[in-house]
Length: 220
Image (tube, rainbow, N blue to C red; front, side, top):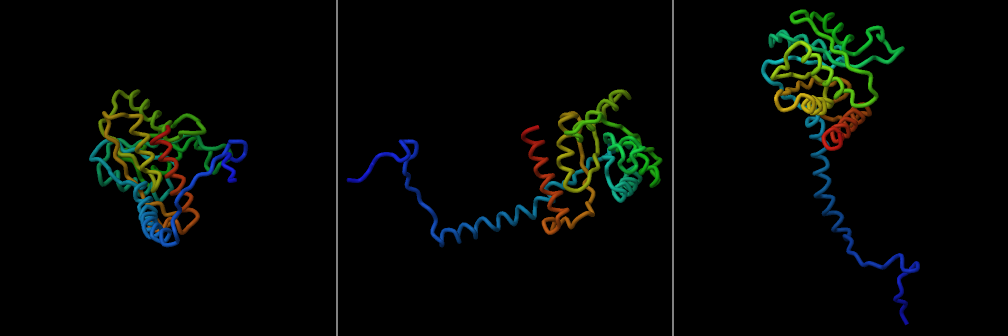
């Protein structure tokens, strides 16, 4: 007689399911792999969004590399910016150039070195936190602007490569709908943006920023 009793003392049961044949797996691969390839190619441009607004306060993240700061100086001159702010929290003790204290002060000094004097860069230091540093920098900037009597209706934020979309999202969370946040994504020279997955630097940067963006978008 067949044994119809459930195995493992009734904790498990047998269940019939359908699995693809080799032809089915081939068809699935032909459909799925091109979609994955397209997503991989579009991921870095998605994160490195470039959508500036006309006018407004120009804000730079102070950890930007020197070549990025040079481009900021050129942008400020060409667009006749009237206010240039640099954000960033404390530098690690013992780190190179830690005597500047914060990334905001370091970034302002670098901008001044490259000729930013009209307008002069304003350092806006943020609190020392171990997480949500960009959000904390946006809060510090909002408080700094409030203390000076006005919140602008437009802000252009300058960031680097794949970090840009997440930065804009967090600044939007802080300033709300009354302030239009534009974003200027400067190229990251640390990897080939069109083939970011071919280098360890590009792979780490893009995947980390994508995970960070998902966290900021859906969990933060």
